[in-house]
Length: 107
Image (cartoon, rainbow, N blue to C red; front, top):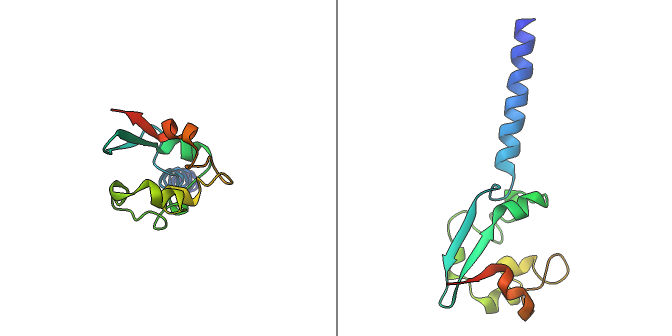
């Protein structure tokens, strides 16, 4: 009986651990990087709450290292990086002026 309870507990803990590492940047974790005119804010929790997993963005369109710092808006609008999903079909379009403030925060 004891062995069975330990196995169940181990299975539950493993399930929670795997679910935690399978989500996007965890809730409460925010990435920020400065551009010339603003600070871009990526809230992983927003993406995780929508059901996205790490593998949805890594290794493509983003490597696991910090390759986001050199992104250019022209590339994003053309469908690279964030623009792969933020194209107006899957998520809000990055080429609409009213969408700028969703990611770009004033310095």
